[in-house]
Image (cartoon, rainbow, N blue to C red):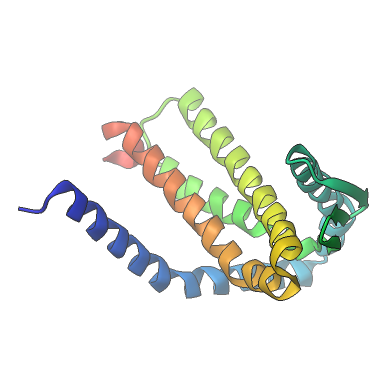
Length: 188
């Protein structure tokens, strides 16, 4: 018989293995979404209107943590004792791909669900808001890593670990959401 502690480690190892297996597909799908948005010309709208808003939200989060932040459109200037850092929030770095993926998963999970419309709306609302918050947190973390550890580690976090953070959120949200609804969610 597996003890609770050992079972917990086994679940973590299995989850980590599954995540590492799925990540190449997740990242490739993000790149496909990027190419689609570029090909239809929607990137300029995201760059002009949404990126500055996300930059403002990330700057506000950093301000809440006591950092001196200046904002200019999609540029965040962060003043810290170790020096100033400028962060450009590009259209492709705001996390819109995770919202598309969240929407697709939502459709697949909820289309056969026996939940009421109010319950579905609540689940979608919480998941959407959580996904936005995780993206803002991810951007703030890139800024903090740039301040405390330098540009190189910030780029590595942005390019690799940011996807893990987002994928982890989506996995955790849907795991919890489909478990709290019991037999009502996704026809289980």
